[in-house]
Image 1 (cartoon, rainbow, N blue to C red):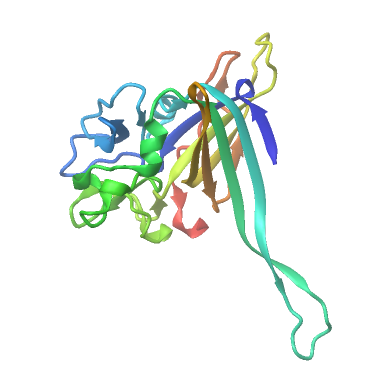
Image 2 (image 1 turned 30 degrees about the vertical axis):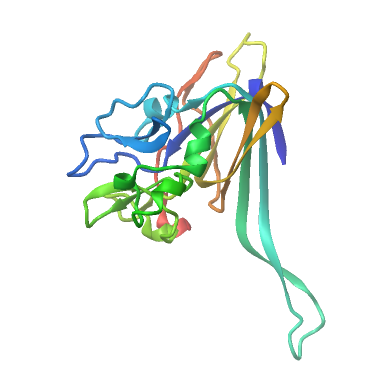
Length: 258
């Protein structure tokens, strides 16, 4: 487990889909909250400050900046199982690794209901990939998915197996969940290039959302995202004391890794 103060890390979030275009879409789909409902911005002009961009390129990642972060808790672990003893074998217990577990917990100042709606809903019925009664009580915890029948992207209801949630133009590219890009900082004084490695969580789903209350109202909110896909750590290709401009991981997760 590693804990970072908000000033020690820059956070960016995108969906796992690169270019969400289809015959019924006007262009790149930004997942947004408009009028307190989760929906898409098909025309490439999302509501400013209230959207999650696609995983198109470095510029798209930078547009998904998450502000007012006070703390980031990064937990990296594995889930294992005791196996044995077996009949006729020595009484030795062994641990077999089942899967990786990476959890990202973000605490930030709350100033709107964006993440409330992403977690709890409602979603736009016409753009939600499930039965008509579901959108009124479900959000976009699982990102987006492509429907080849309608030739269109929908807000995922989480009921499709990860390996089957793939990009329109890439049958081997998994678009399940969200991608978080954590830019770690080396030095807080700004006297030199203070950007370190980029820690990337792939195919992370939103598993928790809480708010803190006091006598004056809501002050902070906590977001939790979890994934079983191996994270990627890399060095940015272009960084300065102010920010990282290029070098984010924008390659879709191959379904063979799931």
